[in-house]
Image (tube, rainbow over all chains, first blue to last red; front, side, top):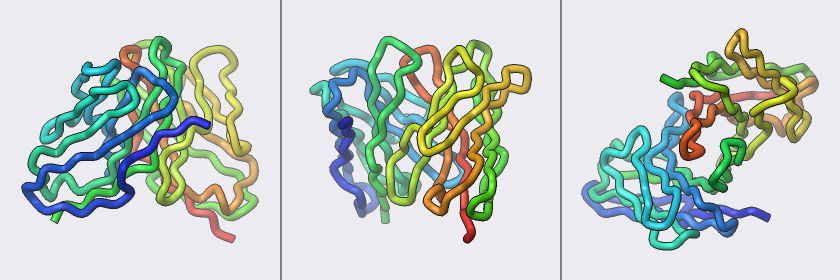
Length: 114
Length: 113
């Protein structure tokens, strides 16, 4: 059974803190993604990675960075959290090499920045 | 630029009634289209996908979708809704590069008994 796990379901942080969101997949997928989900806006891509140590910006990368040191793990980093980063964060992974490959999603991390 | 529009933010249907959720896309090349469902507190689960062939696609949980190129649409349907179908539904289009998805804003389905 395919699985994408995220380190926390709920997280509360203070403004200015450095925040790490961790994502692990056990499917040996090449591609991994971080999305942000907000009501009325759907999911927006923050960053994605198509290989270890490789990353590309998505549509809303400002205020975020990522790290992929191992194939199965993709981390999202908020260098200095702000209240406008309060949101649901979803991680996903997929095989590479074909557009028909679906993305598999983790359960999400609901982050609140106070 | 590529985009996905889901015109209905909320839809309420009675249990046992039929359902159609609308999705329109804008994309210059051949679209690869997906419908995902998100139950409360959960991640997204793939319902079905279209990338070629028969324009009527069958998915899980009794859902189907029809791709209409002339209307740039990929509407999701179910003949008889169950209370457990209450969730948020997302239509998405996949880019040619990197398997990236562009999502619509989502449609929240409420089922009344």
